Length: 115
Image: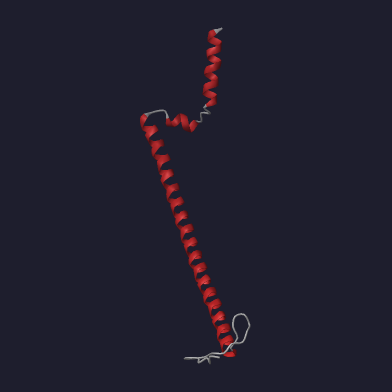
Protein backbone atom coordinates (compact mmCIF):
# COMPACT_ATOMS: atom_id res chain seq x y z
CA UNK A 1 0.00 0.00 0.00
CA UNK A 2 2.80 2.44 0.84
CA UNK A 3 4.50 1.65 -2.46
CA UNK A 4 1.33 2.54 -4.36
CA UNK A 5 1.04 5.90 -2.62
CA UNK A 6 4.67 6.75 -3.28
CA UNK A 7 4.31 5.92 -6.94
CA UNK A 8 1.19 8.10 -7.17
CA UNK A 9 2.89 11.02 -5.40
CA UNK A 10 6.02 10.58 -7.47
CA UNK A 11 4.01 10.72 -10.67
CA UNK A 12 2.10 13.78 -9.46
CA UNK A 13 5.27 15.72 -8.68
CA UNK A 14 6.79 15.07 -12.10
CA UNK A 15 3.59 15.90 -13.96
CA UNK A 16 3.25 19.16 -12.01
CA UNK A 17 6.63 20.27 -13.36
CA UNK A 18 5.43 19.89 -16.96
CA UNK A 19 8.69 18.49 -18.23
CA UNK A 20 9.23 18.94 -21.94
CA UNK A 21 11.76 17.36 -24.24
CA UNK A 22 13.71 20.62 -24.30
CA UNK A 23 14.00 20.76 -20.50
CA UNK A 24 15.04 17.13 -20.34
CA UNK A 25 17.66 17.70 -23.05
CA UNK A 26 19.07 20.64 -21.09
CA UNK A 27 19.56 18.47 -18.00
CA UNK A 28 21.30 15.54 -19.69
CA UNK A 29 24.83 16.77 -19.00
CA UNK A 30 26.76 19.72 -17.62
CA UNK A 31 27.69 20.92 -21.13
CA UNK A 32 24.06 20.73 -22.27
CA UNK A 33 22.95 22.67 -19.18
CA UNK A 34 25.58 25.33 -19.87
CA UNK A 35 24.53 25.56 -23.54
CA UNK A 36 20.90 26.06 -22.48
CA UNK A 37 21.99 28.71 -19.96
CA UNK A 38 23.92 30.61 -22.65
CA UNK A 39 20.97 30.37 -25.02
CA UNK A 40 18.63 31.85 -22.39
CA UNK A 41 21.10 34.62 -21.56
CA UNK A 42 21.63 35.45 -25.24
CA UNK A 43 17.87 35.77 -25.72
CA UNK A 44 17.63 37.89 -22.58
CA UNK A 45 20.41 40.19 -23.82
CA UNK A 46 18.70 40.64 -27.18
CA UNK A 47 15.38 41.38 -25.43
CA UNK A 48 17.09 43.89 -23.16
CA UNK A 49 18.63 45.64 -26.18
CA UNK A 50 15.23 45.78 -27.90
CA UNK A 51 13.59 47.17 -24.76
CA UNK A 52 16.35 49.77 -24.37
CA UNK A 53 15.97 50.84 -28.01
CA UNK A 54 12.20 51.11 -27.63
CA UNK A 55 12.61 53.10 -24.41
CA UNK A 56 15.07 55.48 -26.11
CA UNK A 57 12.67 56.00 -29.03
CA UNK A 58 9.81 56.73 -26.63
CA UNK A 59 11.89 59.21 -24.63
CA UNK A 60 13.02 61.00 -27.80
CA UNK A 61 9.42 61.25 -29.02
CA UNK A 62 8.30 62.61 -25.64
CA UNK A 63 11.12 65.16 -25.62
CA UNK A 64 10.17 66.30 -29.13
CA UNK A 65 6.51 66.67 -28.14
CA UNK A 66 7.53 68.55 -24.99
CA UNK A 67 9.67 71.00 -26.96
CA UNK A 68 6.88 71.53 -29.51
CA UNK A 69 4.41 72.11 -26.68
CA UNK A 70 6.72 74.63 -24.99
CA UNK A 71 7.28 76.44 -28.26
CA UNK A 72 3.53 76.59 -28.91
CA UNK A 73 2.99 77.89 -25.37
CA UNK A 74 5.64 80.58 -25.86
CA UNK A 75 4.09 81.64 -29.17
CA UNK A 76 0.63 81.76 -27.60
CA UNK A 77 1.93 83.79 -24.64
CA UNK A 78 3.69 86.23 -26.99
CA UNK A 79 0.53 86.58 -29.08
CA UNK A 80 -1.57 87.28 -25.97
CA UNK A 81 0.98 89.84 -24.76
CA UNK A 82 0.94 91.62 -28.12
CA UNK A 83 -2.86 91.71 -28.09
CA UNK A 84 -2.87 93.21 -24.59
CA UNK A 85 -0.24 95.79 -25.57
CA UNK A 86 -2.31 96.75 -28.63
CA UNK A 87 -5.38 97.24 -26.44
CA UNK A 88 -3.36 99.32 -23.97
CA UNK A 89 -2.00 101.54 -26.72
CA UNK A 90 -5.50 102.01 -28.12
CA UNK A 91 -6.83 102.91 -24.67
CA UNK A 92 -4.00 105.35 -24.06
CA UNK A 93 -4.61 107.03 -27.39
CA UNK A 94 -8.23 107.62 -26.40
CA UNK A 95 -7.38 108.48 -22.75
CA UNK A 96 -9.63 105.79 -21.34
CA UNK A 97 -8.70 103.88 -18.18
CA UNK A 98 -9.07 100.16 -17.69
CA UNK A 99 -12.41 100.92 -15.99
CA UNK A 100 -13.60 102.67 -19.10
CA UNK A 101 -13.44 106.18 -17.62
CA UNK A 102 -11.89 109.12 -19.38
CA UNK A 103 -8.86 110.75 -17.89
CA UNK A 104 -6.47 113.50 -18.81
CA UNK A 105 -2.72 113.44 -18.64
CA UNK A 106 -1.06 116.24 -16.74
CA UNK A 107 2.67 116.60 -16.65
CA UNK A 108 4.56 118.66 -14.13
CA UNK A 109 3.10 120.52 -11.21
CA UNK A 110 -0.57 121.22 -10.90
CA UNK A 111 -1.27 124.44 -9.06
CA UNK A 112 -4.35 124.42 -6.94
CA UNK A 113 -5.83 127.63 -5.62
CA UNK A 114 -6.54 127.82 -1.94
CA UNK A 115 -9.89 129.24 -0.91
